[in-house]
Length: 150
Image (cartoon, rainbow, N blue to C red; front, side, top):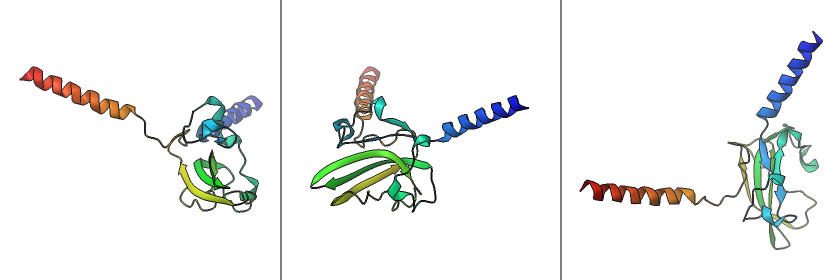
């Protein structure tokens, strides 16, 4: 019986970890690779099931577990900073989860993007170049085919 309970507990813990979202977690003020020119390092990858919500959000949250990934931009003393992290709160009502730490003096929010569609979705917003290359290659192949057929 104890063996069956241990196996059940193990399976349950694996299921919980499989459900938890994984996000990039970094701040551009501490690591320049976290800014607009984002370098997706393994060091930045976090399993959000092991991350607690920020202390300044704890009283406002109904949900204690991370629900999504976040990429937030803000200014402090005129300098833009980018933060990537786990998001805590309702993904449809981001007012609470996107608020800045009140201890940041003169911080001004610029943007807050929330995603929960896939792990590590809080990467760079810059479009990838490969779809453009596929269009060019497709056009070239179509032209060659039309020349061959005529």
